[in-house]
Each structure stands twice: as C-alpha cells, then as structure tokens.
Length: 126
Image 1 (cartoon, rainbow, N blue to C red):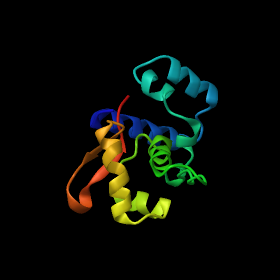
Image 2 (image 1 turned 90 degrees about the horizontal axis):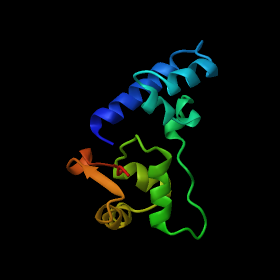
Image 3 (image 1 turned 120 degrees about the horizontal axis):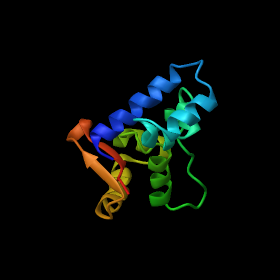
C-alpha cells in the first residue's frame, strides 16, 4: 500500500467515525458504488471503532516470535509502528525485536522507512 493509499484509507476511516448518523445500509451502498468504494469495502468494522487502532493482539503461548510480530502488523495493516511499540507490546528487548524484524523484512513481509528514532515498520503490500 502506497503512502497516498494509506492516507486515503485513514481519511475515510476518520470521516466514517465522525458521521454518527451514517447507517450500515448507507455505508454498504457507499462501499459498493462510487469513487471510494474499493477502499471503503476493504475497511473492517473493528477499524471504525474509536481506539481500535491501539488494540493489538496479544502474543499466544508457544507461538514463535515471528508469528506473534506478524499478527500485530496484520491487525493494523494501515499503521506504521516504531520498534518501541512492538518491543513494549510483546515484552521483548529492543535488540530481540530488531533481530526478528530483520528476516521479516528480508522475506518482504514487513517494510521499513526512516532512521534512528523515526524508523517505522509496517505490513508490506501483498
């Protein structure tokens, strides 16, 4: 997903969140026809709930770190995470987070941009 597509998606989520009188029937119609149909139809109900972007999936017992980390990214595909968020959420040390992110980036599953504290990671486009 390009930066412009991500911005468009986030903007549509905000507009829907700020439209309390918008009914499901109207939202369904908007998602099936019109200029923003493709993006609207890809948005999950969970993304429309205020605060849902902070609800990350908990790691599962005996689940490999790579899988736990990938599930975090898959839960919020539009979000760009700093390594510190992943580190804190999964209860890891920073070096462990970076060590696990390396192969995920090499496999093309995760993308990265920025330097030092402004580095962000996100789910790669399919």
